[in-house]
Length: 185
Image (cartoon, rainbow, N blue to C red; front, side):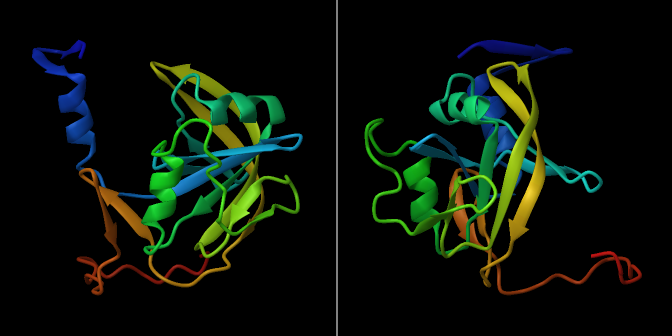
C-alpha cells in the first residue's frame, strides 16, 4: 500500500478506504452494451450532478471491462438496488469469475432508449448518454446525461456502510429544523 501524504498527516490506502467507508451510500449496478455483448458492475460512487440538464456521475476503476465497453458504446444504464438485492450487488462486484455470466438467472430487459440491461425488481432505472470522462488517479469520473428514467419498484434501498450491506431503517428521524415543504420534488 502506497503511503499518501496530506499536509502533516501520513496514511496508507487501506486507512483511506476505511475512512471513506464511514460514508453510507446507496448501491447501484451500471450496465452497458456493445452490439450483442452486455456487461455490468456494482457502483456506489454514484451521484447527481445537475438538474438542468439532468446529469449524473459515477467513478469506475481504470481498465474495467464495463468502463471500456461504455466508452465504446457511449451509453449505459443505472439500476438502483432495493434492500433485498445485496446478492445482485455481490454478483456484479466481481465476486464471480471473469468469464461468468453475471446476468444468468437474473431478470432484465433492454432499456427502450439505450438497449442497456435494466435489472428487474429494483427501485429505479436511469438510461444515460456518456457526456465526458476524466481520469482521476486510479479511477475515472464518468459524467452522463440522463435520457430516460423510471421508478418501477417500491420498497427500501440497499445501503452500504463500512464494508457491510444494510437495509433502510424502519424509523425516520425528525428534521432538526422545520423546513418549508418543497414543491419542486
